[in-house]
Length: 260
Ligand SMILES: Nc1ncnc2c1ncn2[C@@H]1O[C@H](COP(=O)(O)OP(=O)(O)OP(=O)(O)O)[C@@H](O)[C@H]1O
Ligand SMILES: [Mg+2]
Image 1 (spheres, rainbow, N blue to C red):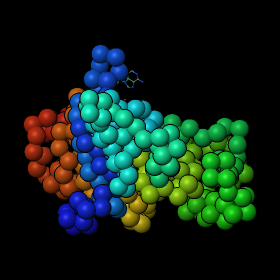
Image 2: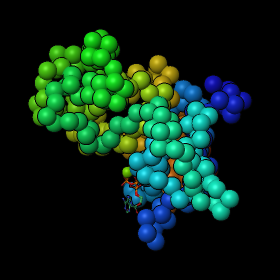
Image 3: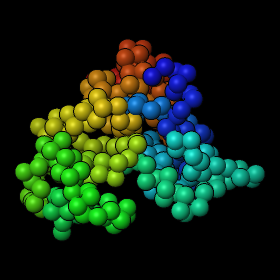
Image 4: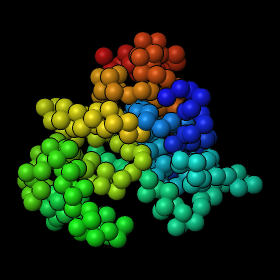
């Protein structure tokens, strides 16, 4: 994607997003533009606001001020007093349905089989018929390599398998954007590879993805861009190769050195 195209058809526009929890200002004016097909790795120290930023994008948290547009539709923007004003609840739901989210701790429904986990949202949220969604669900399970686990309960799966089910479950809603919050942090090292391969496969299919991660190798190889957050600010966001070769900001350099 050229820079011009990225500017004309952004998937996500966040402008000067501010968020506080009590007296703690967690996002201090975060801005980010994301083009179709981009894979942005968000890195930064613990407590820097990475999860909060991701959660604000799909309304799991509300912002205090700033603007968020998703695929050209405004989710929230400032009123004349500079306070965040959200669109109607129905619009919020419609806009946020375009984003799928995968969490560190999988959040699968423990009382449902793998297949039922994947069918749940399309059946209840989208009101689809079982026979409409079943072929797609099976195709997604095949894609993440777990078709043979379709009737298993999550408690019988490894962490890596659970996370691949969580990815398939998010994809079943046919999102245009996928948000990942440290998808491999809860996994034993030998299981991270299978989850990262699944995400890489989505990148190859040009899924637009924002991935909070501590996996620097993954960020370097799969991300088109790397964004560094520190202390509630997005310090810099640059193409992955340039980011690692010549980090511009001293705080980025210090962080990368601490990761070695
Ligand atoms: N629901 C909440 N209520 C109060 N404070 C919160 C809440 N969620 C996050 N915070 C605070 O906001 C700050 C940013 O947290 P956040 O979880 O976004 O950081 P992070 O960069 O994702 O960190 P980590 O790498 O540890 O996941 C922290 O100081 C945290 O304590
Ligand atoms: Mg986090």
